[in-house]
Image (cartoon, rainbow, N blue to C red; front, side, top):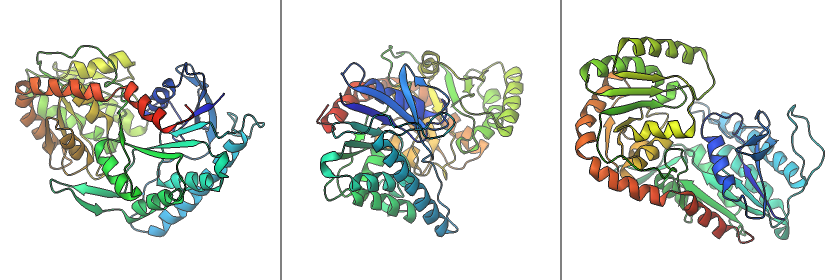
Amino acid sequence: MAKVYICDPCLAHMGGHPAVWTSRFASLFLGTGHRVAILSHGNFPESQIDGIPVIKHFTRTAWHSDDRTDPLVNWDKYFKNNGRMVEDMERLQKGIHLTPDNRFADPHVPLEPEDLLIFTTITEYQMAGLTTWYRGLEKDRRPTLICSLMAPSGYVLEGDSGEGRIYAWDTARFYKLAFRNVEPDGDKVHFIALGRAHAAQYSYLAGKPVPPYPALNTAIQPDGPLRDTPGKNVLLYAGAATPTKGAHHLPDILDILCPRHSDWQFTVQTGNGVATKDSVALDERLQVADRKYSNFNYIDHRLDDTAYCQLFNDSDLVLVPYDPDYYYNQSSGLVWEAIATANMLVVPENCCLEWEAKSQNAGFETFESFTPASIAEAVSRALAPAITSRATRLAKAKRFKAENHLDALKKLLFSMWKTG
């Protein structure tokens, strides 16, 4: 019986996209006669996700930021983390995993050539280690390997001209080295990218087409009917309250928008991440705003899928108040969820969020600077189009949902895994 391992070194808790992504990928293989399991970071607290068993395996997360002042720091991280990935994969090859207390467990079931490994999160700080391990296997012992690429690539196609530019040399170089590891005989290695913008970037670095794959974000998947008639509801925020996502600006944005647009309802949802000193202070300020403004609704806890989807289906405009420097070449599921639910978008200009919205021909407005005033002004400009252009966005939403569904992803993955 072939084994399917959905691997995510970043799956250390239930917050964020890793738990949703791994569960959705794994669900595609249930009932197919294959043994399916999720391989998480060693710190993941649960033994299963949606009934799918979780094996604690990886010792390091994939997320590490480049140091722009001392490039040698990047190389140290590159060698250290990729070296650890080689060790983690050598253990996986032998069927040796981690127990909850991070001690090595007894040998279990080794990898076989008919098996499938899907990395739902992998970055340059682990991908070279992964491909180095893979290249070291005898050809007839290699499983099929599929890597999902969603992180910044170091290379962008900017503006209307689509001119290419390397903006982070270490990042682009590290990815290029990882691709090169499997260039000669990587017929069982496949790369897919999240979003059209990243697919174009990674295709350039890989020197061959890297196809985009369907977005799996929560509010895209349900088949519930989309609302035909416009309302007057704005989703100002949804997700973990972090500074890079502009959460700290929300109280000031509310102080501008709620009095200015008293006939509109504004909603903020937080509580998806780990509580910090800053998030607790923000929660107190948002509680005050909730009592102050009758047209503000504050949801301070994580929502189940049905309630989360309803946030988007009830809205006419979605704000993505993210830091454009941090998200210069990072995607966000909010963009796709907004498109799939016929929402007008407000995103930062000159970054991946604007480029992806433009590539999808979405209805959107941009803010120029990462300040409450600039963000609020962009929302105000977008309110009228949010009503008048809903019919156009509704047609786009239906097409987008038809393209981004689990069956399309399943077809793509099984075309790459010949054993499946």
